[in-house]
Length: 470
Length: 60
Image 1 (cartoon, rainbow over the protein chains, first blue to last red):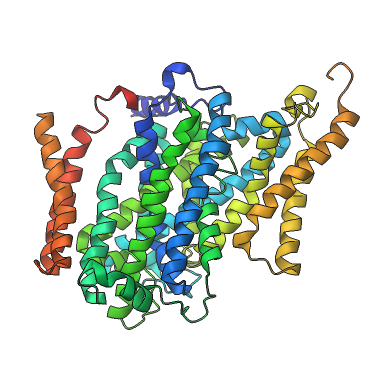
Image 2: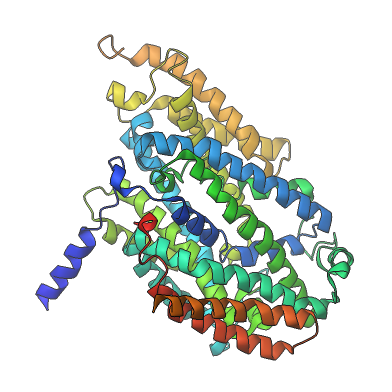
């Protein structure tokens, strides 16, 4: 028995994910893996929440379509021109690159925040899956206003989903990638099929009817009770910044370091236009159907919504959609915490991460306030992405030292810390003083961070680098 | 063998989407579409692990 245990532990330890070294040439992946990964990851459990929340926020049909088309294009360009080129040139994780720039101590703080955000995001997806798992047991589903666990049945459903997802995440990138690749084609079709199947009951009997019904019954421009009204700008900025931490924030360096070419960054288009366009539209249609069928019910359970439209396959789709996003998210959180607990094995760190994430998932607030959380999550992590970008492309040209912490042998880069905190404080001020909503703060925030980092580097590098190092 | 498995997977995907389009056109009842979509799901996940990512060097 002991021998068997040891063997499993050894196998898990042997999964080397190159956390602190460049990816060797032989381990690079082809385009196909990225296309599948992005299509799977962004056709996910959150899509079953975001599409319906746009409906709840009373966006109009033209605002939705144009907002998604333009916002998603900007997101793809951010992956292709900001994140992927640096990942391919350095071949290291974002965390390791950041450590060279900011020093280990600051990265420990950043990683704690980053890992925590990943946990909450993965938690929301576990919760979404749980709304489907709980259907056969007739558990009480949360409603739009629920923030706390709604009963023991809900908690048990969440625990079951969280346990399975954690085990898959422990097995590493290869398993995550394979799972996403296998589920993606089927999942995308379920989204589209389910929407088509309910259209006649909403009043669409031919494609020519769609635009009229879309304006009158789906995206009506009328927000639900206690929900703010969304415009084109909300939709566009949300679509662009929904994955801000991944592209502008550079977290997907961990993914693109495996890419043979930087152009693979464009593979994110599969995720954006299938997941964040078709799937958001489809899930919005499903929610409108649910509202019509159940007389504007306050219940907000993606699993039940999909089950009503597509039966058991719909419920399975919600469960798997949650998995394919929660898996890489917990994996990323595991990498983030691994950078802190370097002496602990990755599988043990991922196990603890999964347990915490599952606990967080018990709170429906993660689902009901998902739009706000997603925007906040990108904003909080974005300044470090700006720092990496400026450090990589501009500092040397300006006569300053890139990778300053590594060069100067410091563990805490004050210029990076000031940049990060001051950017967030200024964004908070813009929010409170100027009333700019969290969805819009990412854009000015990036320029604030870039400017502050250059300014601080100019002031502090000159003062602190010794002549030998300089 | 792999070709047969791929064919079954394809049938799984067809059963996922086509019945829904038939419901939209008024050519099928919604309950039948739900049943066929579930059959398609079983076929897809029952066969896809045996061929997808098995021999493609790009995936290594």
